[in-house]
Image (cartoon, rainbow, N blue to C red):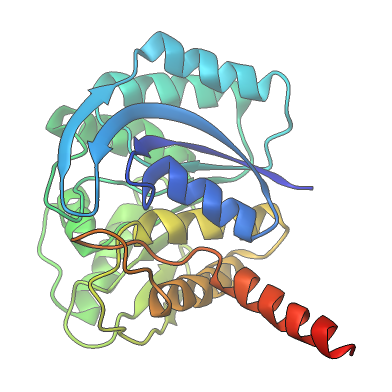
Length: 274
């Protein structure tokens, strides 16, 4: 079985962060491991508080995993502070994982800032250069390139700018623009549009975490970059389509819809004796 390590924050509501990452890994048949960078007290409505984990504990978590278990892919999510980002960068430079998927988490669905301003420079200078692919949404990309993104042409230019920071590839998610949520993949040479269909639901908590983790799992399983992204897009679209009415705010996506649905079909066939 292939493995994937998520380095991110914990979501007590279970829809995003570490919890979403591990669910996505499991849904793709990948053994998931975790390094918790911060503990958030949140639900579908709000983030009430955030407690950063001591950097010595973050370092120990990373070392404990890599020193014992093969890591086929790493997904990086919420880093919160400059100290945390520095610690993660220094640790990964030692182990040099072959696959690193970076989801530059900055703001929660409810508008809570999850990345401190002083951590952005560390992210750009030390984390992005080791990334196989980064997966920002439009607001996150605007912070990274310090400009407005309002069109397809803007998305292409932003991808060039972010890729020049050192990442091998960029997947710029277009869901914040009007129209269909079409994403743009840039591998440093070729632009590829990953088209989507807008699903009208408020239950989109953890979509970015889930998509990036699905990409990491697909890459761990041996998919090419474009295959990993295309399949992850299909997966998150299905998960949003069948999202869950849990809580009073932005509910979670259904990470295991296909698995549960297939299990029901198998059960029906067994009952019928087929």
